[in-house]
Amino acid sequence: MSLSALLAADPSTEPVSLDEAAKQAGDAAGYVEENWSTWLNTSLRIALILVIALVVRMVLRRSLTKLIERMNRSAQVVEGTALGGLLVNAERRRQRSEAIGSVLRSVSSFVILGTAGLMILGAFKIDLAPLLASAGVAGVAIGFGARNLVTDFLSGVFMIMEDQYGVGDSVDAGVASGEVIEVGLRVTKLRGDNGEIWYVRNGEIKRIGNLSQGWATSTVDVMVRSSEDLDKVRAVIAEVGEDLAKAEPWNEMLWGPVEVLGLNEVLLDSMTVRIAVKTMPGKALGVERELRWRIKQAFDKAGIRIVGGLPPVAVDAPAADPTAGMSAPSAFASATSPQSVAATPLAPQGNLAK
Image (cartoon, rainbow, N blue to C red):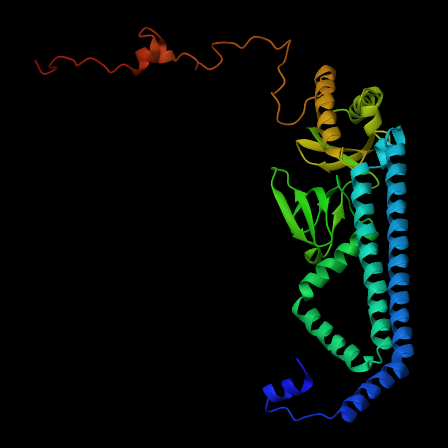
């Protein structure tokens, strides 16, 4: 269809002369010719920015992944040794390294891609000042709206990086206590003594007591009669401590000798002897139970009575007199006794007037 036919079909379109059409085509070609080099430079700059950002991000993430794998391998190597059984928890190390690696990968990706995006916008001659101001205001608003989530996340990051606790540790988090079964950036999972699972937000943990780091202390109080020989009691307890330190598996759990600290309390009918020993973390309760068991058996063999037991029975005590509780016989029980005769009233006499 010719140009004249198109113009005739659309009456609202004004006819364009060939000179005007040629002029417009020449202007367009001149505009393209003037700006093609700028467009090419901008495209190449954007492509270069994207390529560099993706390469740096890939290299950094791969380096972090290799670092985490190396940490896990070192934990697995030490796990099979005696030192690893005492000081290293493979699952704890794995979760901690994975969490730290996830945080570092996310932060590195955000920084690299965010910087690349701003550089691309700058390549398009876009003023970044209003955009950055708007992003700052939006970030503040989101921060106020989701401050609990931000608090939980930051608290989780610092807890993991500082290694305050890990999987397998027995902790007291204030709001809940138990064994740590999972450590996350927002929530920590604890298994309580009765088997329940506590989900504790990291931002709610104001203080935490780790019962599985360093060493623990087993403390046992034994109440005996105040008349017992203290030197004998100390000797029996010392012998129990030596036997416990040589027995399996308690010899690995004890990190020090069993010590008699002395008298913790003295009363009229009893006295309390305090015993303490350093143990492996998390094993204090079992050591206390075993100590009580062995001390009770040793005291029974040595004849030392614990307060609350059966009263002692005298072996050579004489037989009791069955008449000891009876009263002495009375002199008035016999009718012929002088006392009874004297107390008997006189018989009535006859009429004296007759």
